[in-house]
Length: 437
Image (cartoon, one colour):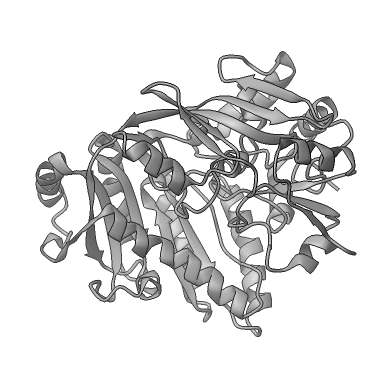
């Protein structure tokens, strides 16, 4: 099957493409890890007939006040942050790969490191404009609720997933939620208004730590609790295992796991004293201090190297994106420890402060089947633990087969209702997670 890819240059072009297409999968910079962009044949075999590349749409950033910024079109996170930073301002959170587009991040409900202290994109988005299936522009506000038809859905969300970054199904409480985390299945986002914050100067404190393969797994939870209780001073809390450190290719780091605290500069001394007094097992004498630009260069290299390895090996990504409650974090790490002993190369990194790490298998062709089998078992375990299987990077095509077990009949019925109401012609990403087959 031939996969068509359209690249609109303006809104009129996009409307024309939409009017002449039976269905479209919208995407931005192509950084998503759940759509196999380097394997177009896999996308086509999933039944996708056409994609629309939004990366060439006209872009603009408008500072509406010192509290709100408007983002229009193909603006990347890096561009938005640079625009705000020169004015002493900052967006609330952003994904690790800042070359990704902001509006695409809304569609997938991306989070990133700062979500630890500032909350999710959903928390920051006040308004969204989008293009519906008829080519009309609609406006959604976070001050308006969707409708009363979703009461049972809301109760299901609140019962299990209220404290998670992203649940197995979108929040769908406020109007803006219709576009956040629905992965373009209800319309194409054209612009958004986001809350902004005063820019704070921070540094990253990298502390070598005993390997997760050997350490007492119960030691992580009190560190997470301490960091969360000081989130006005500790803006993010990250983790790298020693394999990730190798991928970073940073010679200043030792061959060790690392705990990484992003601390507001004026609070560094106080926080280090507290860490030292409360956690004697931390090796603070060997800690390394990095400014944000240097840490970001190190951090973003890891997932990029993973993707480079997989692309070179012609392997579709096999990794996790699960989040659990703090009291269940040792269980999650125990599962990753079991993975590590299966004889397959791997890296483990991510947002330990949110109990949300990414375990990525780096298999050769002989281990591909084993790795896929282990991932299937993993998601069954995550469901039993009561965790969220995809807390950051979305579902897309690659992970759709795993999400079905997390969607009961009521969730499926809600998706059918929303598709019929907002996309009755099924034009937008018809093979997405809202369509159970």
